[in-house]
Image (cartoon, rainbow over all chains, first blue to last red; front, side, top):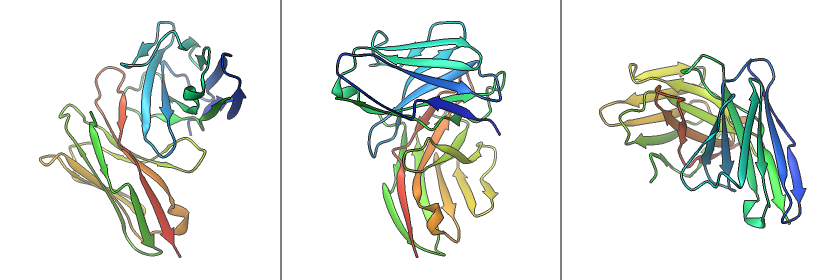
Length: 117
Length: 113
């Protein structure tokens, strides 16, 4: 089955530093990847839609300059949390859809637990 | 604005019992309704999904019931097992564009022996 790999699974960083999270589709090409954020005991909130070769589309209220998204290839999207603050501590999850299959289900990575101290 | 309303937020069921989780939506443009299962520290995994042209879909012990006129759908887990203990999310999406998925708030299910 389709596998989405996310790295790292956990990261601790100091306030003011930047952190990069990678999302890879291992056995399929993904034109579109989605980045979600999940706070403890809460639902997944879509942050942005990452499109290969073009700028990401951000949801309302998500700072594009703080959460930099790059989708440089059909198998890799990265999310960089810039100048991280403790309130950015959260569980970040990416998902991807098989290229050309707009009605196929999303495949999720296992998430990245970010803790900003 | 919560586009997909899910209840209950927590559920305790005895082993062998039926777990029922309900969801309702507002946006009539939604035409794809997946359910995801999430274990602690893991990403969500697709469990089962339905489109509005059918009223029920069954896969093993998992059944989705869909009521288009009421804009409601539910997940039934038959013969619930302790291994089913997880958080379940209903979701909805439309087929247009990039099909963003909107999630419900989640239901934490605990199946006790």
